[in-house]
Image (cartoon, rainbow, N blue to C red; front, side, top):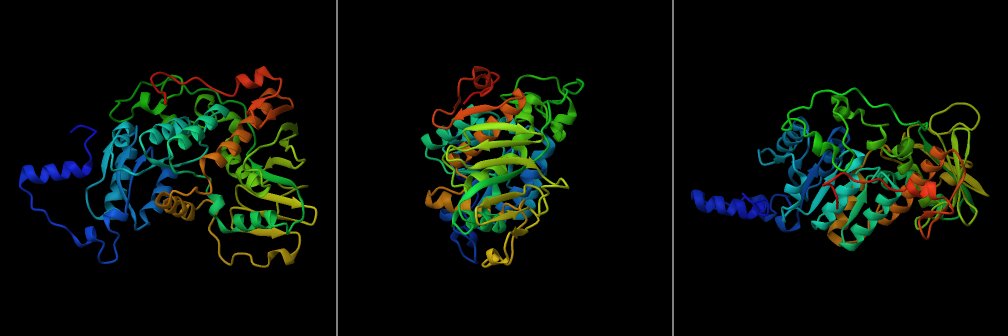
Length: 426
């Protein structure tokens, strides 16, 4: 079967060839509470591991989604996903393959979930955009400043709906905290705080091991655009983080892509980013052109300056009349009880993408822009990468949000991009 052949045409051809009767189930007509095919969103997955399966579970809960195919460089992961999908649907229809280009060329797949490692996020998104797919992509969505630019430019050029996996924009307590900041209830916002992990230098490479059978682990495809590196099974088991070729600078984008994104939103700065970055101990201080400060500081430490909320990815928004904090444990803490009026009575955990997934699907149908669209992702991610570059250089840096380049700093500008290994290009 040519990979240009659609599933629909393949099934029709098989029915004619084999003399199969044409039986139309009630579900195909939208009866018995199901969604008719004309209103369904047909979906494929690319690189679905542990986090990806949590996202997939949210898609499978949506009555208007039909997940049909998984592409993954690892046989064990694609088989796990196939079993999950088939168990959920009560059939054996989920298709599996190791080549993502195969499902990108199916013309009746509307949406792809990209939950590979970081090295594939931007390139996979660009290839999916060119193939006419809408994209839900886990964060960090880019490895560099340039990839952040290319991702947004390509998504917009091809008119695709894109949702980054920065799901806290659709989690109730974070939404409420941002509302307090944006509505003026905290007064004039002057400082926004983003929780991050401790920044670390690049991790040493692991010892070389024999290459596996590509049918079990396609190491070349797993690496994709990253430089060739000797194989070690721990990389494909999730130990790729911290290694420069596979991970964003100093590990900052790991949590920073979430928390800086929220700070950008609260500071009404989605179309820009800080213009300078300097370093104080374990913290990074960014300053916007209008004078607001973005403080990147450790999550979960104790002592002076401790967070008042628990869980990963805390944020704090400060105005001249009050402050608010929100964290992944669903909590909201404010400087005054009065500010809590109207707070959500229930909230998701900050790691739960269910509402984020639903918003994305609604936007696929309406063609509206979701909360974590490509443009918002561009600026928030670039701020992550710029802060990481300055930390790696060990000095204050200045950045122009209009040209998206460092000011009078060629060394920093050279760190804004990385080469892609042939033949993996958009």
